[in-house]
Image 1 (spheres, rainbow, N blue to C red):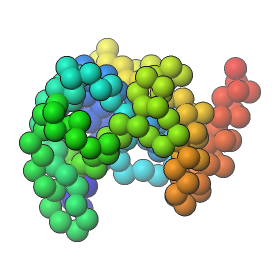
Image 2: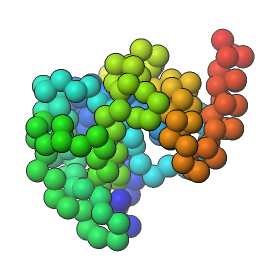
Image 3: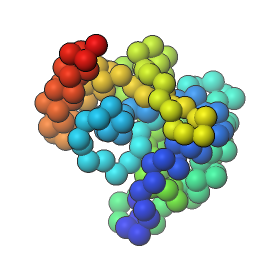
Length: 168
């Protein structure tokens, strides 16, 4: 995200929902939506890989003015189309609403269909809904990734999962 770009995750998710992009919100933002107090400055998603869905994703990315995020440089323009989106497993993007990371197969998972099974539908407002990864899947992925920042988040994620179980 450019330093002067405000982080507007709601807008990113609304644009994806308006374009009917089938995806699951993953990572720290999924944890935030589940009530875990973690700081994040991006939205992470795993999309369904059907060509028609990837084309809808490409159209949404155009609306968000997405570009490839490059450290300490302006974003590189992204000529998004479905075919291009299949050429990489991970896309780190800057948009006019903040950073958006697209991961086809998050660590420890088999991708969209795997994550969709336990994901829950969460309202965004105005009749829009998003699919959010289950906390146990966020934990599974962060554990498999093994990065320091992911491992540091695990105690809060496990505590939130325990609260969910206690609340039924």
